[in-house]
Image (cartoon, rainbow, N blue to C red; front, side):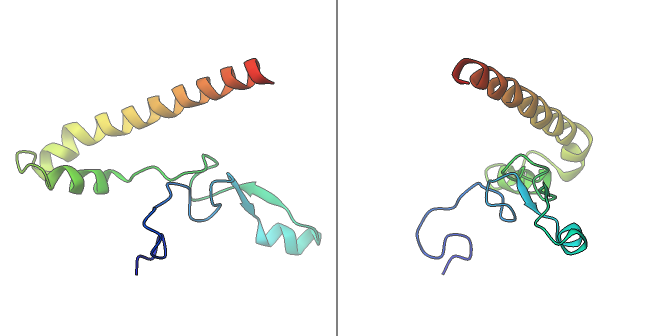
Length: 104
């Protein structure tokens, strides 16, 4: 049985630690203060979903073609992939801000 979906046939992209809520319980501060203390999730850094690791992206691409070597990936494509992910996060933040301004 699939560990991620428990046999439901659907895999969520939500962060496994915060379940897409963007925050998680800070155990140490909660114990210290005696009340629940929330913080940005460490795994997804408050995005609510995990970024696909570059190594996973390389494995997925390698399943379709063998023309990209590991050295080529590390030197040229991985930096582009990382920049693309960063730009997508910036655009997503801008879209979220715009949506909140229009609907809020």
